[in-house]
Amino acid sequence: MKRMRRILPFLSLLALSGCETLPIGPSVLVLPARGKPFEVFQAEVADCRQWANQQIGGSAGEYQAYEWDEAQRRYDNAYLQCMYAKGNQVPGVRRRAPDRDSAQ
Image (tube, rainbow, N blue to C red; front, side, top):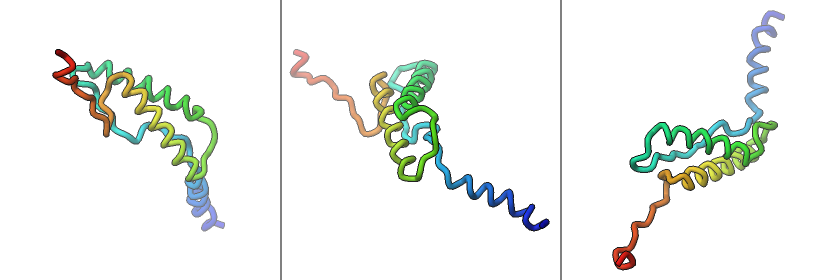
């Protein structure tokens, strides 16, 4: 019986570790736009995290591993779109400099 009391907490923890929850944040790096104050960037991060969370259905339920991966992908996409729309630097995206010929 003593042995069971020692093992029970570990078995409970093991059982709970099999359940996945919704993403708690982005898994991608976004940097502030050049010249943007850090306080403004932090406010945009908070805004975009909240918006991305809404896009995947808030904080409801548990997910299987494949569902969690899909939820994280959708969260990251929504977060990146929001941050890009606010003018921040998103990985893999380069803003085009205006053509010198078209400016004349």
